[in-house]
Amino acid sequence: MDMDIIKEIREAEQRAEEIKKQAVDKAREILKRAEEEGNRFVEEVVQQAQQEKQQFMHQVEEEAKKEIEALHQKAEEECQRIRQMAQAKLEEAISLVMGKVVDMHGHS
Image 1 (cartoon, rainbow, N blue to C red):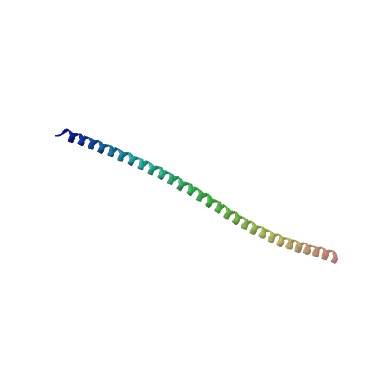
Image 2 (cartoon, rainbow, N blue to C red):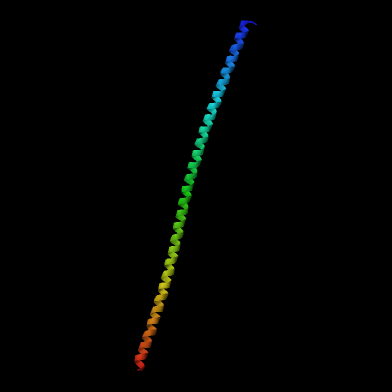
């Protein structure tokens, strides 16, 4: 064989080896970037989920406060109604007792 041909074959093999090395390096870089982007994506999703959770909890808390306020108002109205009924019964009882006292002293 001619030395030039052997030299060309060796150079071609070296170029092929260099191309292979560059391809492997590039593939590693692509994998590294993909992993980094995947990690960023996961972080963004987790952060978004946490924000949504906070918003949901705030909304639930506000709704609970409104419901508690409505129940408090209803209980206050019921207490007021019971006080009014008790006051009316007390006045009725006083009148009844006073009437009996007056009748007892009036008939004696």
